[in-house]
Length: 148
Image (cartoon, rainbow, N blue to C red; front, side):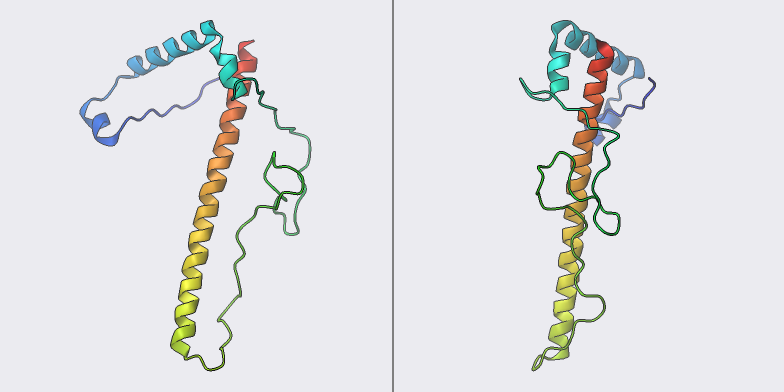
């Protein structure tokens, strides 16, 4: 299977001392042979000592919330709160509060918008990390299965 591989070890170091493609290939070939001959390849595919990576059921449909969002994270226990985009809050300008000058409500709106943007960015980073971990586990399991 032909794949792309990116190897990095620091921006300045890469510029000052670039490695040749042949050096990278020989390093990864040695590591592959070392892991395969020592039996550690299957251990790495399992993820943790004594635990096995359960392949995700491809045909099982995931429950959806109204609007097409998945109910929860794959592998989460039943009853876990659903993950989705953080709630956006009211649409349009916030209602005026009695006795509050307009500047205060505008400042509150700006603060709320900034907090929502930060929450959405944090959610996106968490989801990206979760899916990257799932992808790596699937790749390790597929690699281990192919090597058998």
